[in-house]
Length: 107
Image 1 (cartoon, rainbow, N blue to C red):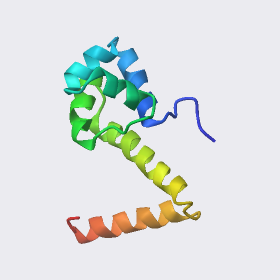
Image 2 (image 1 turned 180 degrees about the vertical axis):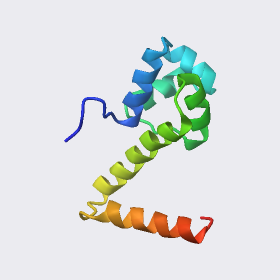
Image 3 (image 1 turned 180 degrees about the horizontal axis):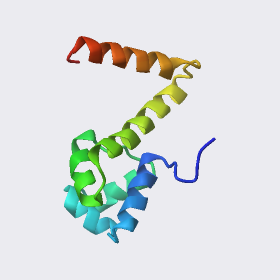
């Protein structure tokens, strides 16, 4: 069950923009994208590009690690839903990430 603070990533951006008293035009300018594109991201019609995460974190005054949690959890949740993945896939994924980290593999 979703909590009141759990949003799709586009809505997360919108809430952060509003907390920082930024218009869509202002945020779009700071990110180097068109306002209409930002509007489509906020409404869930387009995806936010990973290349812009660092800039978004700076503009919205959010820790980059926390922003990555929001971004990737949205990406993973959508893929799990689209592909109708079975229960337990996230636990297996966590174990594989731990293994990769322990082996210091570069992916």
